[in-house]
Image 1 (tube, rainbow, N blue to C red):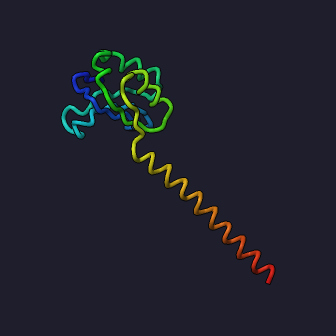
Image 2: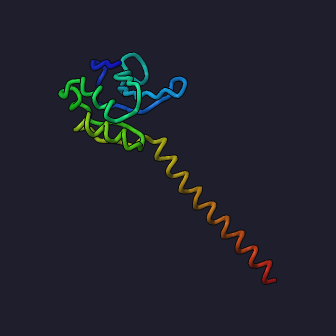
Image 3: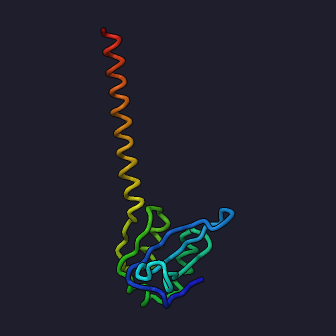
Length: 127
């Protein structure tokens, strides 16, 4: 399902699972803030080629008006955004940026904890 009249300058694209593991790609207009007119497209599957084919039914003129598209770090989403919205700046959503930062912090914390345990063990063995 595609609603080309709902397209705006700032979009968001993501995948979701509605039931029984069926994946869908959802494109929304951020200006609508989840209300009427937010849904631009809901496409079964996440395969880049299929999503690109569906989104290309929206006129190139309308797609070129998109200034920014927010997406996750999946390669397929980047490919979709690049090919369908050639003038849009791609922005990684804050959830994924925060997750990357927290994962990196957790790795550092664990390394320091193991270093402290090793040091404590060495101190006991040398005492």
